[in-house]
Length: 363
Length: 129
Image 1 (cartoon, rainbow over the protein chains, first blue to last red):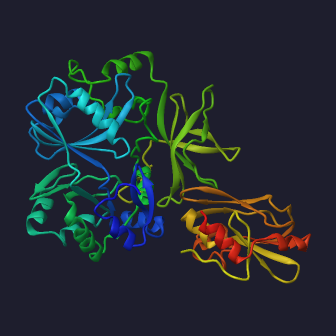
Image 2 (tube, each protein chain N blue to C red):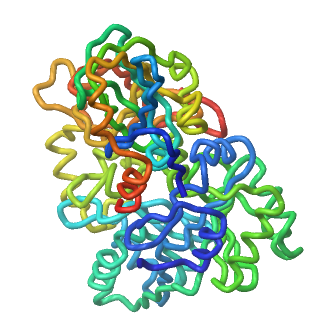
Image 3 (cartoon, rainbow over the protein chains, first blue to last red):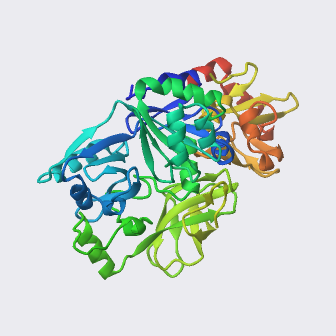
């Protein structure tokens, strides 16, 4: 038996197919993952994301500590309570230890959400780097977290929460969070649709889930979460980047803040060397119109290049009705590559890694 | 709980076989198989006229999650395939023992049927997974 979230019994009662995910017993789907996917694109779906690790970073040096710890500069959040930032956390070699979201409450109070499968590694690293800073790291396992995503997600959520929460949600801009009593409501997500991620005390999670379900929000499992994030062009840690992959080769260059030059974030020296030497690979999107599904690990041939590329994430896109993938390929890649599917080479189109936004084709 | 139908034959790689009584058999994948695969998005079938031996690759079924080879449970000539699966592969999810059948084979050796699993034996295979 793995770790169980406050909603485990709810998933079981709904007939969820439970699988191990980073040590947690989580629902893969409750029936058809394609129907769950479509519910999010067309209406609203909800995900139990309580397995994710929430860490509060507080203290006089919280801001200075995070400016060193991660690639994206949290100074961008100054003066904007609740504002969130997506970032990579690198090792000294410039590899990605994890990707994370940082919510800014104040210059001395940030909330960080990291992946569950990397929890121990992340906490060990974050504690090690905290040496010399006046900062306290506090895990918040008492929180459950429910993501409600889709074009009707916000309206349907507002229909089942208290007036204070409705008022807060009405004011919420994208990528901003607001604290309402013991709830932490963020307009963030991992689906390419508008929506909310709500942290709340675990003992209130089952009741809130049931109210959302009654309002017409469809329960969705990890399988739909994966196809949604892939269509939306969002990376999955462990697939699209790892400890050995630079953010510059993982479509995460936009999360690296180079200015000011004297901000010495961990991994900066390594990334600077990579830029000087020339970054060899990049992460692209692939669209495959043939019969078959692109899968992680498949070999990709790039014309004019001696070295192969590789698919890092691949799936059938329910929205587009074709196979899509992310692939790490030599930078010289053109408009088309050859993918090795079950021993045969087949052409796939190369695009920027974003396939669907707000329910519609994005390329 | 996935359904195992008595009267059909099975093999451990989760194909079912129905003896049509006229020297041909119909083959599909079981309820257990479709449930394990999840949403099926492509089915690749053998060509009509192909000669298969028992255990040969006879096609591929791809779900959002995984690709899985289909094996021919018996030897013989493929005499029909279920073209409907090309446009509606999800039929293999919704009706694995009915409209979601895969192909028909004209048996070259009817005695091969005796070596196949019956429903009870196949249920044990599923239970042990």
